[in-house]
Image (cartoon, rainbow, N blue to C red; front, side):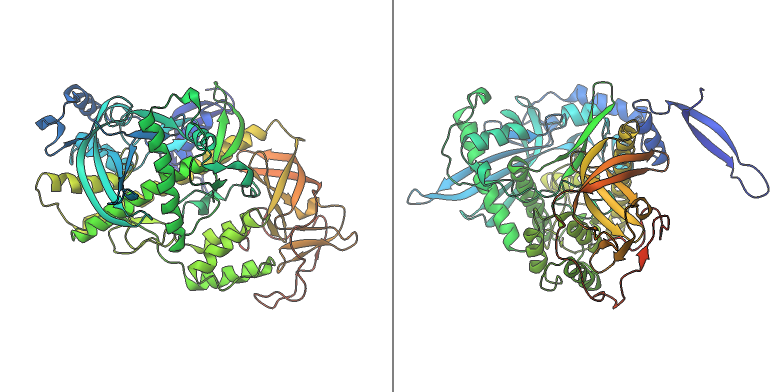
Length: 623
Protein backbone atom coordinates (compact mmCIF):
# COMPACT_ATOMS: atom_id res chain seq x y z
CA UNK A 1 0.00 0.00 0.00
CA UNK A 2 1.28 3.43 -1.00
CA UNK A 3 0.37 6.96 0.14
CA UNK A 4 -2.83 8.22 -1.57
CA UNK A 5 -3.98 4.68 -2.36
CA UNK A 6 -7.72 4.07 -2.24
CA UNK A 7 -8.55 1.12 0.01
CA UNK A 8 -11.52 -0.87 1.25
CA UNK A 9 -11.80 -1.22 5.02
CA UNK A 10 -14.17 -3.35 7.05
CA UNK A 11 -15.02 -1.57 10.30
CA UNK A 12 -14.49 -3.55 13.50
CA UNK A 13 -15.38 -0.70 15.81
CA UNK A 14 -16.72 2.72 14.89
CA UNK A 15 -15.11 5.76 16.55
CA UNK A 16 -16.86 7.42 19.46
CA UNK A 17 -16.08 10.13 22.01
CA UNK A 18 -14.34 7.57 24.24
CA UNK A 19 -12.26 5.50 21.79
CA UNK A 20 -10.85 5.50 18.28
CA UNK A 21 -12.31 3.43 15.50
CA UNK A 22 -10.74 0.18 14.30
CA UNK A 23 -10.91 -1.44 10.90
CA UNK A 24 -9.39 -4.23 8.84
CA UNK A 25 -7.84 -3.52 5.46
CA UNK A 26 -9.70 -5.69 2.91
CA UNK A 27 -8.46 -4.50 -0.48
CA UNK A 28 -6.16 -1.92 -2.08
CA UNK A 29 -7.92 -0.43 -5.11
CA UNK A 30 -5.00 1.61 -6.45
CA UNK A 31 -3.63 5.11 -6.52
CA UNK A 32 -6.05 7.97 -6.11
CA UNK A 33 -6.82 9.56 -9.47
CA UNK A 34 -5.68 6.62 -11.58
CA UNK A 35 -8.12 5.53 -14.32
CA UNK A 36 -10.59 2.94 -13.05
CA UNK A 37 -9.92 3.45 -9.35
CA UNK A 38 -12.89 5.81 -9.09
CA UNK A 39 -15.08 3.12 -10.67
CA UNK A 40 -13.89 0.48 -8.18
CA UNK A 41 -14.57 2.92 -5.33
CA UNK A 42 -18.16 3.50 -6.45
CA UNK A 43 -18.71 -0.23 -6.96
CA UNK A 44 -17.72 -0.86 -3.34
CA UNK A 45 -19.59 2.18 -2.05
CA UNK A 46 -22.84 0.96 -3.58
CA UNK A 47 -22.18 -2.76 -3.06
CA UNK A 48 -22.45 -3.45 -6.77
CA UNK A 49 -22.00 -7.10 -7.72
CA UNK A 50 -18.61 -8.49 -8.71
CA UNK A 51 -17.77 -11.67 -10.65
CA UNK A 52 -20.42 -14.32 -11.19
CA UNK A 53 -20.44 -17.40 -8.98
CA UNK A 54 -18.63 -20.36 -10.53
CA UNK A 55 -21.76 -22.56 -10.63
CA UNK A 56 -23.57 -19.89 -12.66
CA UNK A 57 -20.65 -19.61 -15.09
CA UNK A 58 -20.52 -23.38 -15.44
CA UNK A 59 -24.23 -23.50 -16.19
CA UNK A 60 -23.79 -20.80 -18.86
CA UNK A 61 -20.99 -22.86 -20.45
CA UNK A 62 -23.25 -25.90 -20.49
CA UNK A 63 -25.96 -23.89 -22.21
CA UNK A 64 -23.43 -22.87 -24.87
CA UNK A 65 -22.47 -26.50 -25.46
CA UNK A 66 -26.11 -27.54 -25.93
CA UNK A 67 -27.05 -24.67 -28.24
CA UNK A 68 -26.85 -25.63 -31.93
CA UNK A 69 -29.15 -23.11 -33.65
CA UNK A 70 -31.50 -25.94 -34.54
CA UNK A 71 -35.18 -25.21 -35.09
CA UNK A 72 -38.18 -27.45 -34.52
CA UNK A 73 -36.41 -29.77 -32.10
CA UNK A 74 -37.06 -30.23 -28.43
CA UNK A 75 -33.82 -28.39 -27.63
CA UNK A 76 -35.12 -25.27 -29.37
CA UNK A 77 -38.23 -25.18 -27.23
CA UNK A 78 -41.64 -26.59 -28.06
CA UNK A 79 -44.00 -24.66 -30.33
CA UNK A 80 -41.26 -22.38 -31.68
CA UNK A 81 -42.16 -20.80 -35.02
CA UNK A 82 -39.49 -20.56 -37.70
CA UNK A 83 -39.59 -17.00 -39.09
CA UNK A 84 -35.95 -16.86 -40.23
CA UNK A 85 -37.14 -15.97 -43.74
CA UNK A 86 -38.65 -12.65 -42.61
CA UNK A 87 -36.78 -9.36 -43.12
CA UNK A 88 -35.64 -8.45 -39.61
CA UNK A 89 -33.11 -5.86 -38.43
CA UNK A 90 -31.66 -4.48 -35.20
CA UNK A 91 -30.85 -0.85 -34.33
CA UNK A 92 -28.54 -0.24 -31.37
CA UNK A 93 -25.76 2.05 -30.11
CA UNK A 94 -22.45 1.67 -31.90
CA UNK A 95 -20.85 0.22 -28.75
CA UNK A 96 -23.63 -2.32 -28.04
CA UNK A 97 -22.79 -6.01 -27.77
CA UNK A 98 -26.05 -7.39 -26.36
CA UNK A 99 -28.78 -7.09 -28.97
CA UNK A 100 -32.01 -7.99 -27.22
CA UNK A 101 -34.59 -6.56 -29.65
CA UNK A 102 -35.17 -6.81 -33.41
CA UNK A 103 -37.89 -5.46 -35.69
CA UNK A 104 -39.91 -6.61 -38.69
CA UNK A 105 -42.76 -4.68 -40.29
CA UNK A 106 -45.10 -5.30 -43.21
CA UNK A 107 -48.13 -3.44 -44.50
CA UNK A 108 -51.10 -5.23 -46.01
CA UNK A 109 -52.93 -3.56 -48.89
CA UNK A 110 -56.68 -3.24 -48.55
CA UNK A 111 -59.21 -4.65 -51.04
CA UNK A 112 -58.67 -1.78 -53.49
CA UNK A 113 -54.88 -1.77 -53.30
CA UNK A 114 -54.38 1.09 -50.86
CA UNK A 115 -51.91 0.63 -47.97
CA UNK A 116 -53.85 -0.89 -45.11
CA UNK A 117 -53.07 -2.55 -41.80
CA UNK A 118 -49.58 -2.77 -40.35
CA UNK A 119 -48.11 -6.00 -38.93
CA UNK A 120 -45.30 -5.10 -36.50
CA UNK A 121 -43.01 -7.82 -35.20
CA UNK A 122 -41.04 -7.01 -32.04
CA UNK A 123 -38.66 -9.92 -31.53
CA UNK A 124 -37.06 -10.10 -28.08
CA UNK A 125 -34.20 -12.39 -27.08
CA UNK A 126 -35.61 -15.57 -25.50
CA UNK A 127 -33.56 -15.41 -22.31
CA UNK A 128 -36.07 -17.68 -20.57
CA UNK A 129 -34.87 -20.55 -22.77
CA UNK A 130 -31.38 -20.33 -21.25
CA UNK A 131 -32.19 -19.11 -17.71
CA UNK A 132 -34.59 -21.55 -16.10
CA UNK A 133 -36.24 -20.89 -12.71
CA UNK A 134 -34.46 -22.05 -9.55
CA UNK A 135 -31.08 -22.52 -11.24
CA UNK A 136 -27.72 -20.93 -10.49
CA UNK A 137 -28.14 -18.56 -13.44
CA UNK A 138 -31.57 -17.55 -12.20
CA UNK A 139 -30.27 -17.00 -8.68
CA UNK A 140 -27.58 -14.60 -9.95
CA UNK A 141 -29.96 -12.79 -12.32
CA UNK A 142 -32.60 -12.35 -9.64
CA UNK A 143 -30.13 -11.06 -7.06
CA UNK A 144 -28.67 -8.53 -9.50
CA UNK A 145 -32.09 -7.72 -11.06
CA UNK A 146 -30.54 -5.29 -13.56
CA UNK A 147 -27.39 -4.63 -15.52
CA UNK A 148 -25.43 -1.58 -14.37
CA UNK A 149 -24.03 0.68 -17.07
CA UNK A 150 -21.02 2.66 -15.88
CA UNK A 151 -18.92 4.97 -18.09
CA UNK A 152 -16.03 2.52 -18.41
CA UNK A 153 -17.68 -0.87 -17.88
CA UNK A 154 -20.91 -2.83 -17.74
CA UNK A 155 -21.84 -5.02 -14.78
CA UNK A 156 -24.20 -7.45 -16.53
CA UNK A 157 -27.19 -9.21 -15.06
CA UNK A 158 -26.22 -12.39 -16.93
CA UNK A 159 -22.84 -13.90 -17.83
CA UNK A 160 -21.57 -12.63 -21.18
CA UNK A 161 -21.80 -16.13 -22.66
CA UNK A 162 -25.57 -15.62 -22.45
CA UNK A 163 -25.96 -11.85 -22.79
CA UNK A 164 -23.46 -11.19 -25.58
CA UNK A 165 -23.65 -14.51 -27.42
CA UNK A 166 -26.37 -17.14 -27.00
CA UNK A 167 -29.28 -14.77 -26.36
CA UNK A 168 -27.96 -11.79 -28.34
CA UNK A 169 -29.79 -11.30 -31.66
CA UNK A 170 -26.63 -11.13 -33.74
CA UNK A 171 -26.89 -10.60 -37.51
CA UNK A 172 -26.90 -13.63 -39.80
CA UNK A 173 -27.24 -16.05 -36.87
CA UNK A 174 -30.27 -18.13 -35.95
CA UNK A 175 -31.41 -16.93 -32.57
CA UNK A 176 -34.33 -17.83 -30.32
CA UNK A 177 -36.80 -15.09 -29.55
CA UNK A 178 -40.20 -14.37 -28.10
CA UNK A 179 -42.13 -12.40 -30.71
CA UNK A 180 -44.92 -9.93 -30.11
CA UNK A 181 -46.76 -9.54 -33.41
CA UNK A 182 -49.08 -6.53 -33.24
CA UNK A 183 -51.62 -5.51 -35.86
CA UNK A 184 -52.40 -1.80 -36.31
CA UNK A 185 -54.90 -0.03 -38.51
CA UNK A 186 -53.53 2.31 -41.17
CA UNK A 187 -53.54 5.22 -38.71
CA UNK A 188 -51.68 3.25 -36.00
CA UNK A 189 -54.53 2.00 -33.80
CA UNK A 190 -53.64 -1.41 -32.27
CA UNK A 191 -56.31 -4.05 -32.88
CA UNK A 192 -54.67 -7.37 -32.02
CA UNK A 193 -51.61 -8.99 -30.49
CA UNK A 194 -50.08 -12.45 -30.81
CA UNK A 195 -47.14 -13.52 -28.63
CA UNK A 196 -45.19 -16.68 -29.46
CA UNK A 197 -41.78 -18.36 -29.23
CA UNK A 198 -39.83 -17.97 -32.46
CA UNK A 199 -36.54 -18.49 -34.25
CA UNK A 200 -35.28 -15.48 -36.20
CA UNK A 201 -32.28 -14.42 -38.22
CA UNK A 202 -31.45 -10.71 -38.21
CA UNK A 203 -30.45 -9.59 -41.68
CA UNK A 204 -28.70 -6.37 -40.70
CA UNK A 205 -27.26 -4.69 -37.62
CA UNK A 206 -27.69 -0.90 -37.75
CA UNK A 207 -26.37 1.79 -35.45
CA UNK A 208 -28.53 4.77 -34.56
CA UNK A 209 -26.16 7.04 -36.47
CA UNK A 210 -26.55 4.97 -39.65
CA UNK A 211 -30.34 5.14 -39.48
CA UNK A 212 -30.27 8.91 -38.88
CA UNK A 213 -28.03 9.26 -41.93
CA UNK A 214 -30.47 7.12 -43.93
CA UNK A 215 -33.52 9.16 -42.89
CA UNK A 216 -31.79 12.39 -43.82
CA UNK A 217 -30.60 11.11 -47.20
CA UNK A 218 -34.07 9.76 -48.02
CA UNK A 219 -35.63 13.12 -47.22
CA UNK A 220 -37.80 11.63 -44.48
CA UNK A 221 -36.62 14.27 -42.03
CA UNK A 222 -35.75 17.89 -42.65
CA UNK A 223 -32.86 19.23 -40.59
CA UNK A 224 -33.41 22.76 -41.87
CA UNK A 225 -36.64 22.96 -39.85
CA UNK A 226 -34.98 21.65 -36.71
CA UNK A 227 -36.50 22.84 -33.48
CA UNK A 228 -34.49 25.19 -31.34
CA UNK A 229 -32.19 23.33 -29.02
CA UNK A 230 -32.69 23.88 -25.36
CA UNK A 231 -29.94 24.96 -23.05
CA UNK A 232 -27.83 21.80 -22.97
CA UNK A 233 -28.02 21.15 -19.29
CA UNK A 234 -28.42 17.66 -17.85
CA UNK A 235 -31.28 17.09 -15.44
CA UNK A 236 -30.26 16.29 -11.91
CA UNK A 237 -29.98 12.52 -11.69
CA UNK A 238 -31.62 11.96 -8.33
CA UNK A 239 -34.97 12.90 -9.87
CA UNK A 240 -34.46 11.96 -13.51
CA UNK A 241 -35.13 8.26 -13.08
CA UNK A 242 -38.74 8.92 -12.05
CA UNK A 243 -39.88 8.91 -15.67
CA UNK A 244 -39.37 6.02 -18.09
CA UNK A 245 -39.59 7.66 -21.49
CA UNK A 246 -36.49 9.59 -22.48
CA UNK A 247 -36.59 11.12 -25.90
CA UNK A 248 -36.87 14.88 -26.36
CA UNK A 249 -39.16 16.28 -29.02
CA UNK A 250 -38.17 15.46 -32.59
CA UNK A 251 -34.92 17.13 -33.59
CA UNK A 252 -36.35 17.68 -37.06
CA UNK A 253 -39.60 17.62 -38.96
CA UNK A 254 -40.96 14.32 -40.37
CA UNK A 255 -41.58 14.77 -44.09
CA UNK A 256 -43.71 11.71 -44.89
CA UNK A 257 -42.82 10.37 -48.34
CA UNK A 258 -39.21 9.64 -49.21
CA UNK A 259 -37.72 12.00 -51.79
CA UNK A 260 -34.12 10.79 -51.92
CA UNK A 261 -32.02 7.66 -52.11
CA UNK A 262 -30.32 5.68 -49.35
CA UNK A 263 -26.58 6.40 -48.91
CA UNK A 264 -24.71 4.01 -51.25
CA UNK A 265 -22.10 3.11 -48.65
CA UNK A 266 -24.78 1.50 -46.46
CA UNK A 267 -25.26 -1.13 -49.20
CA UNK A 268 -28.92 -1.76 -48.41
CA UNK A 269 -30.98 -4.43 -50.08
CA UNK A 270 -34.34 -3.33 -51.47
CA UNK A 271 -36.15 -5.23 -48.68
CA UNK A 272 -34.17 -3.54 -45.90
CA UNK A 273 -34.48 -0.12 -47.56
CA UNK A 274 -38.26 -0.37 -47.72
CA UNK A 275 -38.41 -1.80 -44.18
CA UNK A 276 -36.59 1.22 -42.74
CA UNK A 277 -38.94 3.58 -44.55
CA UNK A 278 -42.00 1.73 -43.24
CA UNK A 279 -40.58 1.69 -39.72
CA UNK A 280 -40.16 5.45 -39.74
CA UNK A 281 -43.69 6.03 -41.07
CA UNK A 282 -45.41 3.82 -38.50
CA UNK A 283 -43.26 5.02 -35.58
CA UNK A 284 -44.20 8.65 -36.25
CA UNK A 285 -47.90 7.67 -36.37
CA UNK A 286 -47.58 5.87 -33.03
CA UNK A 287 -45.71 8.82 -31.57
CA UNK A 288 -48.42 11.25 -32.65
CA UNK A 289 -51.16 9.02 -31.20
CA UNK A 290 -49.31 8.69 -27.92
CA UNK A 291 -49.10 12.44 -27.45
CA UNK A 292 -52.73 12.91 -28.44
CA UNK A 293 -53.76 10.70 -25.54
CA UNK A 294 -51.73 12.84 -23.14
CA UNK A 295 -48.31 11.21 -22.83
CA UNK A 296 -45.71 13.48 -21.26
CA UNK A 297 -42.23 14.05 -22.59
CA UNK A 298 -39.37 15.83 -20.90
CA UNK A 299 -36.16 16.87 -22.59
CA UNK A 300 -33.92 14.41 -20.75
CA UNK A 301 -30.73 13.93 -22.77
CA UNK A 302 -28.48 11.34 -21.15
CA UNK A 303 -25.02 12.29 -19.97
CA UNK A 304 -22.25 10.34 -21.69
CA UNK A 305 -18.67 10.47 -20.39
CA UNK A 306 -16.00 10.52 -23.11
CA UNK A 307 -12.96 8.34 -22.33
CA UNK A 308 -9.67 7.83 -24.12
CA UNK A 309 -8.15 4.39 -24.74
CA UNK A 310 -6.51 4.49 -21.29
CA UNK A 311 -9.80 5.17 -19.52
CA UNK A 312 -9.10 8.84 -18.76
CA UNK A 313 -11.93 11.35 -19.11
CA UNK A 314 -11.55 13.61 -22.14
CA UNK A 315 -14.92 15.35 -21.83
CA UNK A 316 -18.65 14.67 -21.78
CA UNK A 317 -21.65 15.19 -23.99
CA UNK A 318 -25.40 14.81 -23.92
CA UNK A 319 -26.83 11.92 -25.92
CA UNK A 320 -29.65 13.36 -28.02
CA UNK A 321 -32.52 11.03 -28.88
CA UNK A 322 -32.92 11.52 -32.60
CA UNK A 323 -35.50 9.98 -34.93
CA UNK A 324 -33.64 6.67 -35.02
CA UNK A 325 -33.96 6.43 -31.24
CA UNK A 326 -37.62 7.42 -31.47
CA UNK A 327 -38.37 4.60 -33.95
CA UNK A 328 -37.11 1.97 -31.51
CA UNK A 329 -38.64 3.74 -28.53
CA UNK A 330 -42.12 3.76 -30.08
CA UNK A 331 -41.98 0.08 -31.04
CA UNK A 332 -40.71 -0.95 -27.60
CA UNK A 333 -43.45 1.08 -25.89
CA UNK A 334 -46.07 -0.44 -28.19
CA UNK A 335 -44.84 -3.98 -27.46
CA UNK A 336 -44.66 -3.42 -23.70
CA UNK A 337 -48.22 -2.11 -23.64
CA UNK A 338 -49.62 -4.78 -25.98
CA UNK A 339 -48.04 -7.59 -23.95
CA UNK A 340 -49.36 -6.16 -20.68
CA UNK A 341 -52.87 -5.85 -22.09
CA UNK A 342 -52.74 -9.43 -23.38
CA UNK A 343 -51.68 -10.76 -19.96
CA UNK A 344 -54.41 -8.70 -18.31
CA UNK A 345 -57.02 -10.01 -20.76
CA UNK A 346 -55.85 -13.55 -19.90
CA UNK A 347 -56.51 -12.71 -16.22
CA UNK A 348 -52.89 -13.25 -15.19
CA UNK A 349 -51.06 -11.27 -12.55
CA UNK A 350 -47.60 -10.07 -13.55
CA UNK A 351 -44.96 -7.48 -12.73
CA UNK A 352 -46.16 -4.20 -14.19
CA UNK A 353 -44.21 -1.00 -14.66
CA UNK A 354 -46.21 1.41 -12.52
CA UNK A 355 -46.01 5.19 -12.48
CA UNK A 356 -48.66 6.62 -10.16
CA UNK A 357 -50.44 9.91 -10.70
CA UNK A 358 -48.74 12.84 -8.95
CA UNK A 359 -50.05 14.40 -5.77
CA UNK A 360 -52.42 17.28 -6.73
CA UNK A 361 -50.77 19.46 -4.10
CA UNK A 362 -47.43 19.08 -5.85
CA UNK A 363 -48.99 20.00 -9.17
CA UNK A 364 -50.48 23.13 -7.58
CA UNK A 365 -47.02 24.05 -6.33
CA UNK A 366 -45.62 23.39 -9.80
CA UNK A 367 -48.25 25.70 -11.32
CA UNK A 368 -47.22 28.44 -8.89
CA UNK A 369 -43.53 27.90 -9.59
CA UNK A 370 -44.04 28.18 -13.35
CA UNK A 371 -46.03 31.38 -12.81
CA UNK A 372 -43.16 32.82 -10.78
CA UNK A 373 -40.93 32.33 -13.82
CA UNK A 374 -43.23 34.56 -15.86
CA UNK A 375 -44.89 31.75 -17.84
CA UNK A 376 -48.67 31.72 -18.05
CA UNK A 377 -50.35 28.33 -17.92
CA UNK A 378 -53.58 26.66 -16.93
CA UNK A 379 -53.61 24.54 -13.80
CA UNK A 380 -51.06 21.79 -14.25
CA UNK A 381 -53.37 19.34 -12.53
CA UNK A 382 -54.48 18.66 -16.11
CA UNK A 383 -52.07 16.35 -17.94
CA UNK A 384 -52.80 18.21 -21.18
CA UNK A 385 -51.90 21.56 -19.62
CA UNK A 386 -48.67 19.96 -18.37
CA UNK A 387 -48.02 18.48 -21.82
CA UNK A 388 -48.54 21.90 -23.45
CA UNK A 389 -46.22 23.58 -20.97
CA UNK A 390 -43.40 21.11 -21.66
CA UNK A 391 -43.85 21.67 -25.39
CA UNK A 392 -44.03 25.45 -25.09
CA UNK A 393 -40.77 25.77 -23.12
CA UNK A 394 -38.67 23.76 -25.57
CA UNK A 395 -35.64 25.89 -26.34
CA UNK A 396 -36.48 28.38 -23.58
CA UNK A 397 -33.61 29.14 -21.15
CA UNK A 398 -35.98 28.16 -18.33
CA UNK A 399 -36.69 24.74 -19.86
CA UNK A 400 -34.19 22.93 -17.64
CA UNK A 401 -35.65 24.40 -14.44
CA UNK A 402 -39.22 23.55 -15.48
CA UNK A 403 -38.29 20.00 -16.49
CA UNK A 404 -36.56 19.49 -13.17
CA UNK A 405 -39.45 20.94 -11.18
CA UNK A 406 -41.86 18.73 -13.12
CA UNK A 407 -39.83 15.64 -12.26
CA UNK A 408 -39.82 16.69 -8.61
CA UNK A 409 -43.62 16.72 -8.66
CA UNK A 410 -43.84 13.18 -10.03
CA UNK A 411 -43.80 9.82 -8.29
CA UNK A 412 -41.07 7.33 -9.06
CA UNK A 413 -41.79 4.56 -11.55
CA UNK A 414 -41.56 1.14 -9.88
CA UNK A 415 -42.29 -2.54 -10.46
CA UNK A 416 -45.48 -3.91 -8.91
CA UNK A 417 -48.27 -6.41 -9.72
CA UNK A 418 -50.87 -3.86 -8.60
CA UNK A 419 -53.30 -2.76 -11.29
CA UNK A 420 -52.11 0.81 -11.59
CA UNK A 421 -51.26 2.54 -14.84
CA UNK A 422 -48.32 4.56 -16.05
CA UNK A 423 -49.07 8.27 -15.67
CA UNK A 424 -46.27 9.67 -17.83
CA UNK A 425 -47.06 7.32 -20.72
CA UNK A 426 -50.84 7.81 -20.33
CA UNK A 427 -51.18 4.02 -20.28
CA UNK A 428 -53.63 2.06 -18.15
CA UNK A 429 -51.73 -1.22 -18.50
CA UNK A 430 -47.98 -1.37 -19.00
CA UNK A 431 -45.07 -3.72 -18.27
CA UNK A 432 -41.45 -4.25 -19.26
CA UNK A 433 -41.05 -7.01 -21.84
CA UNK A 434 -38.34 -5.85 -24.24
CA UNK A 435 -35.05 -6.15 -22.31
CA UNK A 436 -34.77 -9.53 -20.55
CA UNK A 437 -30.98 -9.56 -21.02
CA UNK A 438 -30.61 -6.63 -18.65
CA UNK A 439 -33.84 -6.50 -16.57
CA UNK A 440 -35.19 -9.32 -14.42
CA UNK A 441 -38.85 -8.12 -14.50
CA UNK A 442 -38.84 -8.61 -18.28
CA UNK A 443 -37.62 -12.19 -17.77
CA UNK A 444 -40.54 -12.92 -15.43
CA UNK A 445 -42.96 -11.74 -18.12
CA UNK A 446 -41.27 -13.97 -20.71
CA UNK A 447 -41.66 -16.98 -18.43
CA UNK A 448 -45.41 -16.51 -18.37
CA UNK A 449 -45.52 -16.90 -22.16
CA UNK A 450 -43.06 -19.77 -21.93
CA UNK A 451 -45.45 -21.59 -19.60
CA UNK A 452 -48.45 -20.82 -21.82
CA UNK A 453 -46.58 -22.13 -24.90
CA UNK A 454 -46.01 -25.42 -23.09
CA UNK A 455 -49.61 -25.68 -21.98
CA UNK A 456 -48.75 -25.03 -18.33
CA UNK A 457 -50.74 -22.88 -15.96
CA UNK A 458 -48.36 -20.15 -14.71
CA UNK A 459 -47.72 -20.04 -10.98
CA UNK A 460 -49.55 -17.00 -9.60
CA UNK A 461 -48.63 -15.42 -6.26
CA UNK A 462 -49.46 -11.79 -5.59
CA UNK A 463 -47.40 -11.75 -2.40
CA UNK A 464 -44.30 -13.13 -4.13
CA UNK A 465 -44.62 -10.59 -6.96
CA UNK A 466 -44.99 -7.71 -4.49
CA UNK A 467 -41.74 -8.75 -2.80
CA UNK A 468 -39.98 -9.27 -6.13
CA UNK A 469 -41.21 -5.91 -7.43
CA UNK A 470 -39.79 -4.11 -4.39
CA UNK A 471 -36.48 -5.92 -4.81
CA UNK A 472 -36.20 -5.07 -8.52
CA UNK A 473 -37.15 -1.43 -7.87
CA UNK A 474 -34.49 -1.17 -5.16
CA UNK A 475 -31.83 -2.69 -7.39
CA UNK A 476 -32.78 -0.32 -10.21
CA UNK A 477 -32.49 2.64 -7.84
CA UNK A 478 -29.08 1.45 -6.62
CA UNK A 479 -27.82 1.18 -10.20
CA UNK A 480 -29.12 4.64 -11.07
CA UNK A 481 -27.52 6.25 -8.03
CA UNK A 482 -24.18 4.52 -8.69
CA UNK A 483 -24.18 5.61 -12.34
CA UNK A 484 -25.00 9.19 -11.36
CA UNK A 485 -22.36 9.34 -8.64
CA UNK A 486 -19.63 7.91 -10.85
CA UNK A 487 -20.46 10.39 -13.63
CA UNK A 488 -20.09 13.17 -11.08
CA UNK A 489 -16.75 11.84 -9.79
CA UNK A 490 -15.32 11.40 -13.28
CA UNK A 491 -16.29 14.94 -14.25
CA UNK A 492 -14.73 16.30 -11.06
CA UNK A 493 -11.53 14.41 -11.79
CA UNK A 494 -11.59 15.87 -15.28
CA UNK A 495 -11.84 19.43 -13.94
CA UNK A 496 -9.30 18.90 -11.14
CA UNK A 497 -6.35 20.11 -13.25
CA UNK A 498 -8.33 22.75 -15.16
CA UNK A 499 -8.61 25.50 -12.56
CA UNK A 500 -9.13 28.79 -14.38
CA UNK A 501 -10.57 27.20 -17.53
CA UNK A 502 -13.38 29.34 -18.93
CA UNK A 503 -16.62 28.07 -20.47
CA UNK A 504 -20.22 29.02 -21.11
CA UNK A 505 -23.01 27.85 -18.86
CA UNK A 506 -26.62 28.36 -17.76
CA UNK A 507 -28.03 29.25 -14.36
CA UNK A 508 -30.01 26.19 -13.28
CA UNK A 509 -30.73 27.20 -9.68
CA UNK A 510 -30.99 30.49 -7.77
CA UNK A 511 -30.95 30.52 -3.97
CA UNK A 512 -30.27 33.08 -1.28
CA UNK A 513 -26.83 31.52 -0.74
CA UNK A 514 -25.68 31.31 -4.38
CA UNK A 515 -26.14 30.26 -7.99
CA UNK A 516 -26.06 26.78 -9.49
CA UNK A 517 -24.55 26.67 -12.98
CA UNK A 518 -24.39 23.87 -15.54
CA UNK A 519 -21.77 24.01 -18.28
CA UNK A 520 -22.91 24.16 -21.89
CA UNK A 521 -20.25 22.12 -23.66
CA UNK A 522 -19.48 19.83 -20.72
CA UNK A 523 -22.68 19.41 -18.67
CA UNK A 524 -21.22 19.50 -15.17
CA UNK A 525 -23.08 21.36 -12.44
CA UNK A 526 -21.15 23.70 -10.16
CA UNK A 527 -21.85 26.37 -7.57
CA UNK A 528 -21.07 30.06 -7.16
CA UNK A 529 -21.51 31.27 -3.56
CA UNK A 530 -23.30 34.59 -3.20
CA UNK A 531 -20.22 35.74 -1.29
CA UNK A 532 -18.19 35.36 -4.50
CA UNK A 533 -20.28 38.03 -6.25
CA UNK A 534 -18.12 40.84 -4.88
CA UNK A 535 -19.05 43.54 -7.39
CA UNK A 536 -22.26 44.47 -5.56
CA UNK A 537 -24.62 43.76 -2.68
CA UNK A 538 -27.18 41.27 -3.95
CA UNK A 539 -30.77 40.80 -2.83
CA UNK A 540 -32.52 37.47 -3.39
CA UNK A 541 -36.02 37.67 -4.87
CA UNK A 542 -37.64 34.32 -4.15
CA UNK A 543 -40.68 35.01 -6.35
CA UNK A 544 -38.63 35.83 -9.42
CA UNK A 545 -35.85 33.31 -8.81
CA UNK A 546 -33.34 36.11 -9.28
CA UNK A 547 -30.65 37.98 -7.34
CA UNK A 548 -30.55 41.78 -7.86
CA UNK A 549 -27.52 44.01 -7.37
CA UNK A 550 -28.51 47.00 -5.24
CA UNK A 551 -25.89 49.43 -6.57
CA UNK A 552 -24.98 48.51 -10.15
CA UNK A 553 -28.32 47.08 -11.18
CA UNK A 554 -26.86 43.70 -12.21
CA UNK A 555 -29.19 40.72 -11.88
CA UNK A 556 -28.88 36.98 -12.39
CA UNK A 557 -31.95 34.85 -12.84
CA UNK A 558 -32.89 31.27 -13.55
CA UNK A 559 -32.03 30.36 -17.15
CA UNK A 560 -29.50 33.15 -17.80
CA UNK A 561 -26.55 32.28 -20.02
CA UNK A 562 -23.29 33.17 -18.28
CA UNK A 563 -19.54 32.96 -18.75
CA UNK A 564 -17.81 31.08 -15.96
CA UNK A 565 -14.41 29.73 -14.96
CA UNK A 566 -13.48 26.70 -12.88
CA UNK A 567 -12.59 28.01 -9.40
CA UNK A 568 -12.18 24.96 -7.15
CA UNK A 569 -12.66 21.19 -7.23
CA UNK A 570 -13.08 18.88 -4.25
CA UNK A 571 -13.53 15.31 -5.45
CA UNK A 572 -13.93 13.84 -1.97
CA UNK A 573 -16.77 16.21 -1.09
CA UNK A 574 -18.21 15.96 -4.63
CA UNK A 575 -18.06 19.74 -5.08
CA UNK A 576 -17.28 21.93 -8.07
CA UNK A 577 -17.08 25.72 -7.67
CA UNK A 578 -17.24 28.18 -10.53
CA UNK A 579 -16.24 31.83 -10.73
CA UNK A 580 -18.64 34.16 -12.51
CA UNK A 581 -17.11 36.20 -15.31
CA UNK A 582 -20.29 37.76 -16.66
CA UNK A 583 -23.65 37.26 -18.28
CA UNK A 584 -23.99 36.41 -21.95
CA UNK A 585 -26.71 38.40 -23.71
CA UNK A 586 -29.84 39.58 -21.94
CA UNK A 587 -31.56 38.22 -18.85
CA UNK A 588 -34.35 35.75 -19.57
CA UNK A 589 -37.93 36.53 -18.62
CA UNK A 590 -39.45 39.51 -16.84
CA UNK A 591 -38.19 40.58 -13.45
CA UNK A 592 -40.50 39.77 -10.58
CA UNK A 593 -42.23 42.61 -8.82
CA UNK A 594 -44.37 42.75 -5.73
CA UNK A 595 -44.97 40.06 -3.16
CA UNK A 596 -44.16 36.40 -3.35
CA UNK A 597 -47.12 34.64 -4.99
CA UNK A 598 -46.69 31.46 -3.00
CA UNK A 599 -46.52 32.67 0.56
CA UNK A 600 -47.02 36.44 0.46
CA UNK A 601 -43.54 36.95 1.86
CA UNK A 602 -41.38 39.89 0.89
CA UNK A 603 -38.14 39.04 -0.92
CA UNK A 604 -35.12 38.34 1.19
CA UNK A 605 -33.11 41.35 2.28
CA UNK A 606 -29.75 42.19 0.71
CA UNK A 607 -27.06 39.56 1.01
CA UNK A 608 -23.63 41.09 1.58
CA UNK A 609 -20.42 39.64 0.22
CA UNK A 610 -18.97 37.38 2.86
CA UNK A 611 -22.41 36.65 4.35
CA UNK A 612 -23.49 33.37 2.84
CA UNK A 613 -27.01 32.39 3.83
CA UNK A 614 -28.10 28.77 3.98
CA UNK A 615 -26.15 25.62 3.18
CA UNK A 616 -23.28 25.65 0.74
CA UNK A 617 -24.96 23.30 -1.68
CA UNK A 618 -28.30 21.57 -2.08
CA UNK A 619 -30.48 23.78 0.12
CA UNK A 620 -33.95 22.57 1.06
CA UNK A 621 -35.74 25.33 -0.79
CA UNK A 622 -34.15 24.53 -4.12
CA UNK A 623 -36.49 23.51 -6.95
